[in-house]
Length: 397
Image (cartoon, rainbow, N blue to C red; front, side, top):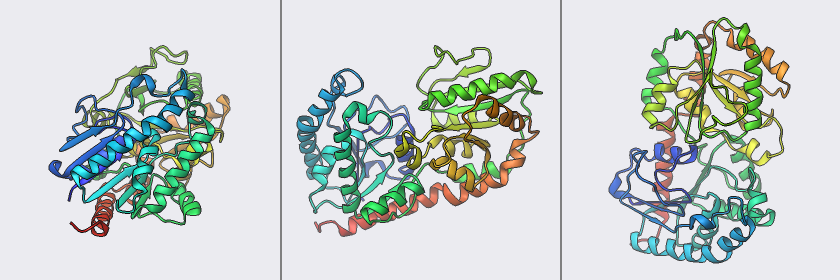
């Protein structure tokens, strides 16, 4: 079955969303896999190969990061999107895929919504993040984000099959589109990960190693965490270390402590997995306020699952209504707090970090949560069945 992936990011992009897509496609034969995106690939560093990739490239100077963001957004919405839509239509005509996997992310939304309005196209949709999160409304424009969010709702409604990144997001999409999802689709644990969890034994590190994987999106919460840990480090039986894994460097930040923090840079997925398994805790922070509620309540950080797969109990910080805190409440896989006070958080962390064997304490719930919510093989089977349904409803050749 020919599958065409349609999204903003290229096959080997960094970040949690692209990693989920690659994991779900690991069994898909390369000759049957095609890719369309708005951003070009910079090599095959994550090993995702496709039969053909085409890029309706957004020129780097026109991507609305900071300077002239509103003007650039207007250009992308009104002019570039028409060119990109024509580019996507040509690829659909040339490839004639059996199924299309739409992942509506940022600027892919506008051209994809134009093209997929054609009822001849049968597609599966995965919503990973809403577009009106972080500072996108300030960069792109509030009205424009509303229009793009409505386009995603329209895509979700028209799709043959659908899924989303968290249970709260699935419920939210059902409430305003009337369409349910086949499953919650996120990163998952493979059979080898489950085998590792079954045979894992407590580590004997001379230090308490806390791992953080990925980009720091809530830097104020990270800074609060560092301050709380710093205030109790001298009182603990073992020294505490924070290990950072990701494409960005934070060594110049005021909260960075060179004597007990280590940056490892971006690693391949097998290297990252091996490094994480050497640690004692994983760290999964979200905002402690609800100001960015569309992200807080509906998105779900991939690092939470990455840490589960490595057998790491989680230190989870976030607003009580956030998706990640609701998951941590349902499955006690570590220490969780919504405190915004350094002193209160420090007292709570001291009790957690002094624990003799956090793995032995939290192993049963880590395994339970992983099997119930994040079984990669089960998610892949369900996703492939969705692609098959799209193919069956597509036009006869």
